[in-house]
Amino acid sequence: MRARQNISSGMKMEATVGYSRAVRVGAHVWVAGTTAVDDNQQIVGPGDAYAQARFIFQKIERALQAAGASMKDVVRTRMFVTDISQQGEVGRAHAEFFLDVKPCATMVAIPALVNPEMLVEIEVDAYVEP
Image (cartoon, rainbow, N blue to C red; front, side, top):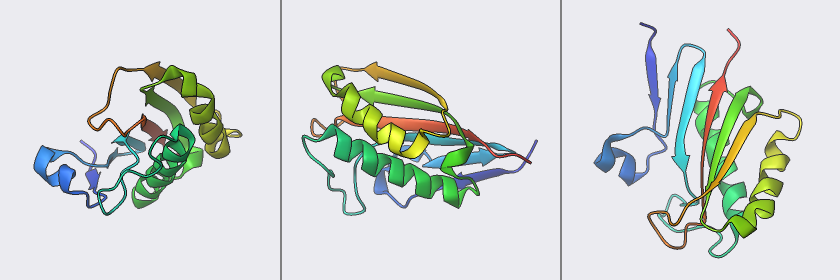
């Protein structure tokens, strides 16, 4: 088995729930579902799906960098939105990071996230060329 690298963002939930922001095994990197919660446990962009998605992609980018990857290595994105009418705003943020990369992408409407102020949750998978 290849070495496993767990990447933490330092958020309290990671330690109490038992998960990693990202995990790298070999050339594969998986980034956990990520929401617009900052280092002070505050929601970024309440009521603004675009602002939340943009912040989330920036958070994901930091996790990928910690795993030795970049946004250019992303092969799949999964976006969960609580209001599908905001899909254009979430898609606009997605395009700012992936317009040239063009990973496989899924967007799904869900009834709620763990905090009602959270409008978007995003996870990505990446493959780093050996």
